[in-house]
Structure formats: structure tokens, C-alpha cells
Image (cartoon, rainbow, N blue to C red; front, side, top):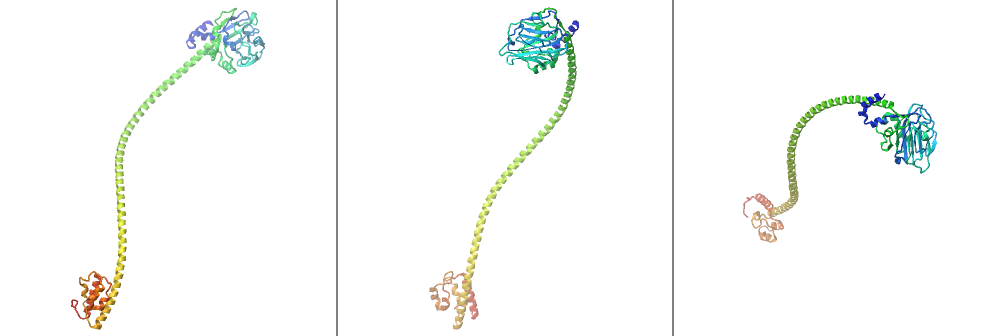
Length: 429
């Protein structure tokens, strides 16, 4: 057995670490004789709160004291009898597994909770209240495997007994049970910072009686560790193969990505050239657009000038139309006046003809064509001047302006009168 343990230790030492880990896996086997371990620990960190947890295999040899401190300050039994604190004892005799079975026993207490609890495999099998303000004393002797006066000796095995400087919770103790003995001692303790009295130190103390180390469970833990290590190795092999596959896939992907990247770069180069061409075309379009805008602006200016000129032409046209309309009105007035004059001249002609016929006289109307009477108003003086020739006819012309139209009409009348009397148009009076 020792040879097997040595071989396994050498095989797994590198994976589990130092001999400290192997000491944690070592159990102590106590007989019902005087087997015990005692010493005076530093209890200063455990006065207001503590937890004691140990893996125990009870062989049914009596009351089975796991440990006692300061005589009656603390007592923990493997079967629950006379378990207590501050000299107050309880008998927790239910909830224990069958004899010869490993289980995790824990005792907890704190000054704040004022309650001592006893756990078996993570379940509370009993508790009791403690006095208010009462804390644990320091300077006492810790005794493993026996109570004071060599009574209530322990018969069985214990392993990984630790004292923590805090009151462990139910869930924390349950996690210890769930991990199991091997995992609990092979890994770093979850509560390492509060572990004050350590099993790897206790197992190296001097002993009384025939208490001996046993490696049975350690061998099992080592075998489990080797199996676990083999599983890890296989997992590592699988992982290595997976990594190799991943590396090959990575290289293949890199090659594909490189090919795709080169193709993309080529496309980008083509796109860049097309972009440059488009930019050149856009610059040309922009130039033409600016030119068109300038032309449109110039056209707009010319349009405005043309509109101004058209407005001026329209104004002048309207003025001309107004003048034409006014001229038309004046023309109508002149024509009306000429009609009136023609009517009066006709009347005068009739009278002159009547007078000429009655007096058997002829008249020379060309006198009205002389420069003396042209473009002037025929006055009373003119009538008196000419009355010797045509007294009555001249009186009829008073107030008539001697325009060309009137003179032409008079010539026409004169021609007609002369022709009617058998005279030639140029006959003198």
C-alpha cells in the first residue's frame, strides 16, 4: 500500500502541486486507546465567530470525541452526544449515516447569531442558543481524538479538519459536500482567507498512542486525480486536434480571404479609375452647368431689359393708339365741319347761282386763290373790299377759314359755274 502510494505520489506530484496537497489528502486513524493529538493554537481570530469542518468515518467505538477545546469550551462528537459550547451540551443523535461511512461534520457559531449549529453532510441536525455577549476564550488546549481526562475516546478516521474564523452558511457547507473529499482537498479552499487552523499543520504534530496516517482515501483521490488527469489529457488531445483543424481551416480561410481580398482590391482599383473618370465627367458637367447658369442669368437680364423695352414700346404704342384715336376723333370733327362748310358752300353756291342767274352776271371766283386770302380767316373787311365784285356772295363767307380744302371746293364750284355760263375756267372777270 505504501509502495503504491509512493508511486502514485510521484506520478501525480506535478499535477497536484507540493506535498502540502498530499498532506491534505492524508487521514489519521484513531483507536480507542490513548490515541490523540494536542497543542495550544492561536485562538485570537476565533473568539467571536468560528466554524469547524472535518471529514469523519466513525467506527462506532463509543462517544467518539472529534476534538475538544479549553476542556469544556468546545466539544464536538462524531455521533452527536455531548456536543456543545460554553459547557452547555446537547445530544444530536439523529441524521448520522451508518457506521464506517465517510461524512462531513461541521459545527458553526458566532457572537452575532448567538446560535451553535451542527451539520451532517450539509444538513442541520441540531442547534442551541448561547448567552448574550459571551465569546470564546483564548489560550486553551486543542485536543484531537479525546476529551479531557482520557474519556470519550475517538475510534475511527478523520481527514481535513479546519477551523475558520467565520460562521459558514448552510449553502457554503452544502457546496463543500457537493465537491466531495477529493475535490475539496485537491483544489484551493473556497474559504482559504478565513482558514486559521489547518489540517496540513495538524497532521504533522506529535501524537500520543497509536494514531497513524492512512492513505486509503488519498490513494483513491490520487487514482481519481490520475483518471481526471488522463481525461484532461484526452480532452487536451481532442482540443489539440480541434486546434489543428481550426488552424487548417484558418489557413484555408486566410487563403480564400487573400484571394477574395486580391479580387476585391482589383475591383477597387477599377472602381477607383471609374470614380476618377466620373469625377472628371462631373467636373465637366459642373463647368457646363455653371456656364449654362451664367447664360441663363444673362438671358434673364436680357429678358428683363427686353421686358422693359417692350413695356416702353407698349406704352408708346398705347400713346400712339390714343393719339390715333384722338386724330380719328379730330378727323371726324374736321369731316363733320367740312360737311357743314360744304353744306353752307352749296347753299351759298345755290344762292350765287340764283343771284348770277337773276342779274345775268358772271363771277370770277379765282380771286379766293390769291395769296392774300390763302390760309386766313375771311373777315368783314375782306368782304367790304370785295363787295364791289360780289357783295352778296362775299357776305355769305364771313367766319369761314380758307383752308386748301375750302379753296379746292371753291375752285370746283368756280369751274362748275363758269362751265355753266359758257365761260372757260381761266376766263378773267
